[in-house]
Image (cartoon, rainbow, N blue to C red):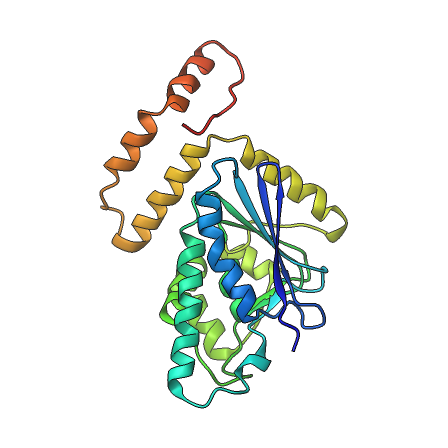
Length: 259
């Protein structure tokens, strides 16, 4: 069985991740999950990375769920529990990445592919993109709390349960209306507009972006009254903030240093 792979490419401040499982619509294999689990530490150890781009290789699909061939030897409920725990660890790890993560969705992002797209801070999609987790119609398995919780945050509780209980796929336009998708882009201009978006993010203050992500994580976990004074203090005491104020008052462009 082809194992599939997560292709990792560093392009200046951009870390590009490609979900690659040719002939399987980029269905996610165990090695691909393991690769995704390492991304957080890779970014944490490299301050030069300003943004992560996650995309399916080949343009046919983002990811058509977990590679089902891997379920063929499941014989116990405990194996299913361990699999869902594995997915949960990947979700938690991706959500903990310090820089913005941009998902680029062409075609289906279903099952585990939907879960990965939901971990992205911004999602751009082509008009033919579809989103869903139709396990009630296909495999008869279920989703772990980490995935359901993230979908509720991104799609809303009502829309999430309606999608899951009916096993329906959401078109890109409905995902855009729900706020799950940031923008729909035609395929012929996708690469150009994605690159412009990534460069725009790279030009922003990295400590500010990291702080915004951390505040969002804490709100999602503990609610709007969460304490984030340590995050605020770290940004306001940074060299970037001092340089930003000076540059603004002197009407000059600043190059953020991330310190």
